[in-house]
Amino acid sequence: MTHSLLMIIAGYLIGSVSSAILVCRLMGLPDPRTSGSLNPGATNVLRIGTKLAAALTLAGDMLKGLIPVVAAHALGLEPLVVGATGLAAFLGHLYPVFFGFKGGKGVATILGVLIGFHWLLGLTVIGTWLAVAAVFRISSLAALVAAALAPAYAWWLIADQNIAIATLIMTILVFWRHRSNIRNLINGEEKKLGYKDKPTEAAVQKSANDG
Image (cartoon, helix red, strand yellow):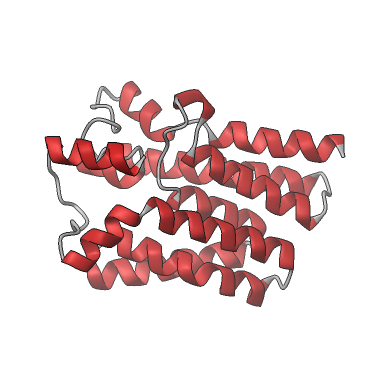
């Protein structure tokens, strides 16, 4: 029980490390929380910075979801704890204790968690994201489609209810964090991959309202 609890807590703390903020600080880029879409994630880092910065952010966010789950597997913990550890890492990204509980939308981190659950599960979700992104060139749409299918993939490939439930909870949270993107998609206003812009007063207010 102690090992399980410590692993879950460690997962949350690792997930709370914001790759976007650290990469932007190290590379002299604007704070992603106050620039671009105001989201500390790889897509926004690409918008306000460089491809290298975005790639480093993406890798960091995936690793902080992957590492705790792999560690839980290595310790021989039961699927319930493995699922809870992955969920904790994901929640750390969304609500990081080190950054005022204001984090990103969780796409890269959920991918890392899913790879940790089962490598084929992660690759299947990544393949779905890439396919949708290639056709529509909209990152948020690709993320939402991939996340929506993830619980079904998890049940199909792993057939463990603990992992499937953890994946479903993360999917629901991904949709919640993308609610402004969903509104933009419905209104035909969502920006495509590679678009660069500057934050407006209205955007700042919208982000504040979305929490």
